[in-house]
Structure formats: structure tokens, C-alpha cells
Length: 376
Image (cartoon, rainbow, N blue to C red):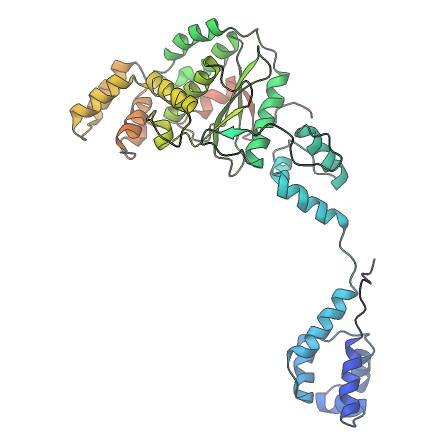
């Protein structure tokens, strides 16, 4: 379909006007340009467009601005070009509001005609509006107090979809407290991480691991499907044993405190100051409680303070290994807490071993080449 919103004359009309103004014939201009008269006639009649080279040649012949004829041709071509597919604007609108392209890449929705894409996104984000309006929900907050981004929302909804399909025992707060003792016993060896998902499932907690979306910076989430079905989601964004245990304990603290029942708690960038358990004006009270609980579960605060104070900023590998053994945790867990306490983030990083290979086979997972079998 041609765009006829406004009429633009043939560029050749202006060439003929310049010829007439000088009392020339077309063959005179053809001679000046060094081309056949028939070729010039096609340009004047609009059968051939004016190239950039011809624009410069005409400008020289007529002694006018070099952009004159090229701009005429651009305006004519734009006015007479086919209108763009309306689906382009609709897809642009979808991508502006949602990470649609990456969701397609991850297999969460299928790449289809724009009408079908809109319907899939409506179902994915549980929107009833006909034109895929912005997500209707109570404002979800991250641990930093900011509104969740569309990318974070998409990750959250994926965790929610998977959790709803899980068959799980009835939740028991008492069982979770007892499970915390069992989990503590799994912190010594990375091989024992394979037992974590079952320990959580046995107390009725839905544990879901979803690979993060680009730019989401999510470490974990806590929310409840209802008063009896808590969910903990993790991204394993940092494939390190210290981060795994800190984030897990952090989210379990939220569950134990009944956080996230009204509004899901999306925890982002649980590193550095936010992971230290220290008081900070940037961190909410419930996040400070979760941080302190998680840090203490990794290494009791009084033990960490005592150990770091006695070392006067010098930490030998031997001392750290003995400390970790005494705390009954993997050396990487102790190293991570020393990092957060002292800011010496390059200390003994070789002990920050990777954990995905132990966690993923035993957990309910979406990502890293695997698409969870849930439909929207």
C-alpha cells in the first residue's frame, strides 16, 4: 500500500524547470552531463530515481546546492513508499513494556503473529485488557525499595507459574525451622547441595530455580501463592557457594517471618553492603532482618567479628581453613563472609566454588538450556 498522506511532485519537474529557466533543451543538459538524452528523459519522467552521484552532477550543472535534488528524491520516495506493517508498531510497544524478545528466546512464549504475541503476554502477565495494558498489580518492591522493572516482573511471573504446578506437601513453619538444622549440616561440602531441594520440599516449601533475564540483577524472591503455599525462587546469578547459601538463608528468613504474603519480595544485588547484615538507610527493616539472619547462618556474627579482629587485616589460608572447619561450613562460605566484613574481595577467591552443577539436577529448574514444562 502506498502512503498518499501528502503529494510530492516528481523531482524531474524541478529539473525541467531549471532547463527551461536557462533556455536549454533536454539534449543540452544531457550533453552537459555526458549521458544519453533517453536516460535523462527517464529521470525527468520519474521512471528512474536521482542517485546521489546524479544529484551532485545536476547541482554542478545548474550551480545550486548539492543537497537540493537528493532531498527532492528522498521526499518523493518517502511519500510514495508503502506504509509500514502495522504490526511493527505493535511489536515495538510490546518490547517497550515487556522483555518479549528474550521471553521468546527462553521458550516462555512463542514467536507468532503480533495478535497471538499479545494474547500470550496477556496470559503470561495475567492481564485481562484487550490491548495488553501495563501489568495490573499492587506495586511490587525490590529489596532496595524501587519498583520492580518489567524484566524482573517477567522473571517473577515465571517462578510463579512453575511453583503453581508443583506438587508439594502441606507447608509447616515448624518443619521449616527443623529443616534449617538439616540445611546447616549441608554447608560443609558442595556435594551436599544436591539434598537442598528435597529438604525444602519435605517441609512444604516450593523451591524454584529460574535463570535470570539479562539486566534483571535478581538473586532471589519470596512470595506466597496463598497463606499455606510459600515459594522461594533463586536465579543462581552468581555461581558461587557463598552467594548460594547467603541468598537461600535470606529468602528462608523472609518465609519464616511471613514476609511477601501481600506483595512479593524481589531481592536484587544481595552483594556487598546489602549482604553484610549491617544497618543501612537504603535497606528496609525486613531486609535487614533477613540479611542478619542469613549472615549469621553462614557464620555466626560474633565468631566472624572475633576472627577478623584478631587477624589485623592479615588472613592466612591456613587460618581461614581452620576457621571454616570450626564453623562447620565450606571454606568458600567463610571466605564470602570475610569478604563482606572486611571488603577484601580478592582474598582466597579460589574457594568460591561453583554450585550450579550440584543444585540444578535436584531442583525444579527453568533455564540453562532447559524449559520448564508449564503452559500459560
